[in-house]
Image (tube, rainbow, N blue to C red; front, side, top):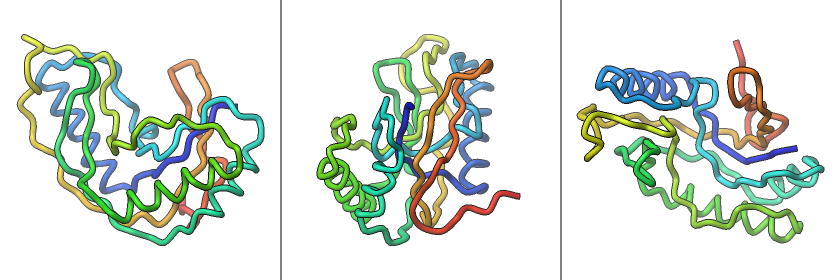
Length: 175
């Protein structure tokens, strides 16, 4: 089972991010756009792991208190991945350290790359002249993170399907 730990966004942030994607499309940016329901902030990528209960135990062992995050700027990684950024945030960084320490303590493997908070908007992005970011408004928005989700990733007919299989914090109300 392919797993990752993430922050899922509330509706106002999802609206801001999808509007940003629409602006990119209007600037003739082509590529694989992340579907609205898949927009998230990855805190730790576990990958193939057969026991999600162990991961949930580790998540419960990393003290979680709600905190705010704020969208901040955009960027391009490896020349073809467009992302929206998250403002520097000591509470987020501290939580990620506690979470990763708990995963290590439980012996759960995860990608140990330095945490660089970003939201993937477009993969394999291409645009006219390919130099510099297209002219779009920088995203601005803020939300209180009240839940951290353990997500399962599966390949579907229309791309990846992300499903929450557990978490810590307040339950998310789905209407």
